[in-house]
Amino acid sequence: MVYRFVWILILGLSLSTGHANEAGSEYLGNEGVMVSHGKWKVLFDTFYLDGMNLYALVAPQTRAQLMAGERPYDGVDAIFVSHIHDDHFNASETLAYLRSQPDVSLFAPKQVVDALSQSINSDDPLTERMVGFELRPGDAAQSISRGGILVEAVNIPHAGGERMAQISNLAFRVTLGKWPTVLHLGDAGVDGAYFESLQPHWDARLTDIAFPPYWFFLQEEGHKVLSQKIQALQTIGIHVPASAAGNGASWRQKARGDLYTDPGERRNIPYRNKKTP
Ligand SMILES: [Zn+2]
Ligand SMILES: [Zn+2]
Image: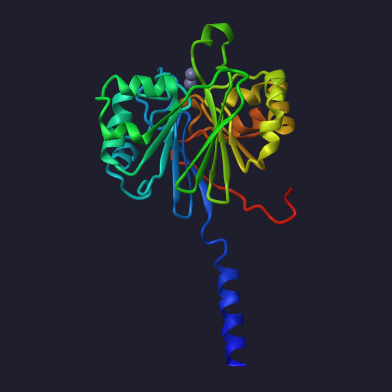
């Protein structure tokens, strides 16, 4: 009888703390976001230094905490770079971070890894922590699993058409343990037919949270890609001009969707219930 009571007590405790390990995302600036769940933490497009006079930079204090590995930016497992543009990536900043945080892996297009490799010796142990994906538009997804994190990448052509054809822009879909699955689209262009050609990829895994550039919200085709192709449970637009800071509500209303506008903003990632397909 006592044992049964203890068992019920333990069951009750585990049910009540079942959501204590909440997953969430934090906006750092431009397309920089951190996603965390329990012991897992990953960063997307965080180590850049150029806002092109239009986009928010990572706040100086946040940047210092990141570099020092201070809470809440401690224990990061992996960083992702969508593409080589200066408002997403800076080689020396990225190398400085990888040197200061010896347990962090980097996942990026080969174009980005090549740029980083120019500044380091080929026998530098750092090279073992850098994974470069060579993916062209239309290529099947490539995936790799490291330390309980599943990384799946596809190439999605950069917005701007032919002018941007030389830029390798990757959409990383990252699963932290069993949950959640996060999709970062970099500077993907809105092309319904292209997203449709990747439908088996979108259908292969449920996305809990997608981060598209905010221009997806400015046209009907973008809304359709998000709601009919990607079908994430939660979608937050990024790459919003810095001038939107403090004005998030009206930007979100105009966009007819959720956006990150103010660095430091956070959202919880809703827990999948059993009815979720
Ligand atoms: Zn770009
Ligand atoms: Zn950009």
